Image 1: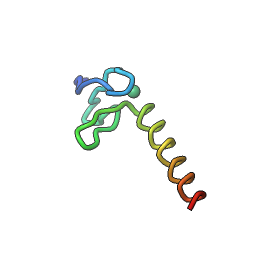
Image 2: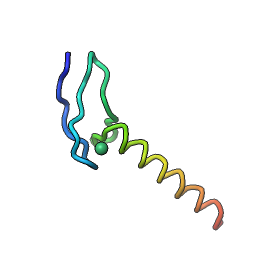
Image 3: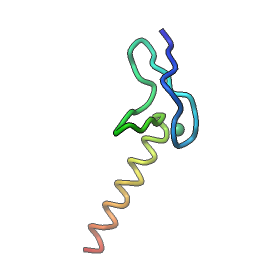
Image 4: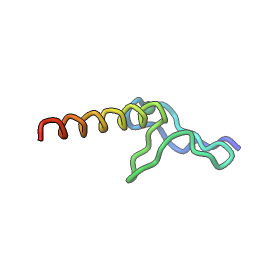
Amino acid sequence: MHERVGTCEVCGREVFCLNGFLNGVAENGRLRCFDCADREDVAADARKEEEKRTE
Ligand SMILES: [Zn+2]
């Protein structure tokens, strides 16, 4: 089972569903591949750390 779910909204790579396992992250109606989801999470964490330091 190899079903195309859509494309990553960040890099445009195709995101598949493999045997019921999504090859990416679907969140709040946004679809991203794991690479971009990881990168955004790291960026979000970095921003949080920055806010903590400036408070
Ligand atoms: Zn991507």
